[in-house]
Image (cartoon, rainbow, N blue to C red; front, side, top):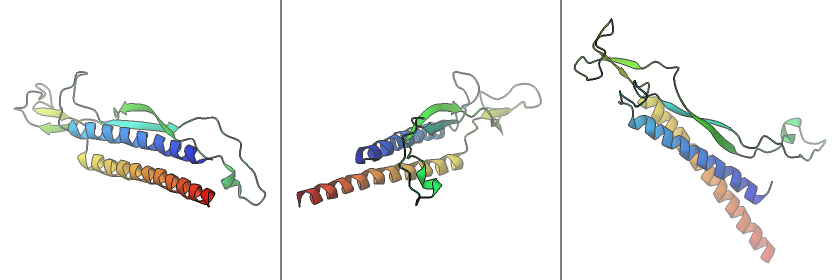
Length: 155
């Protein structure tokens, strides 16, 4: 694994976490949207990540290394989908004056609100920000190692 491959892996993490932050921001912005173009209240979105590059690279094997260390390094992460959370039901809030209130039946006067929980979204946002920060530190560490190697080469 070379210097640039570690930077490329961290770059995929940076891209994925930035997209995740954008999706979370969209969820927070639409936490009170009761009417969408698809009909009904806004549904929470979430990002789905998968490892990038299913092909595995050959690994140097040693009798002294445990089997767990013989697995090849990853190639980063990719976003395979941004999906709507259709499992969680919309929250029901009683507000008969709301223009989107249900008019008939046992739920008359209730408004279907988005299935977005602001507290959960903020926790996810903090997690995404910390993951983004960790990937920036990987890039910075790789840059520092490269500069140190260049200084050793000059000496």
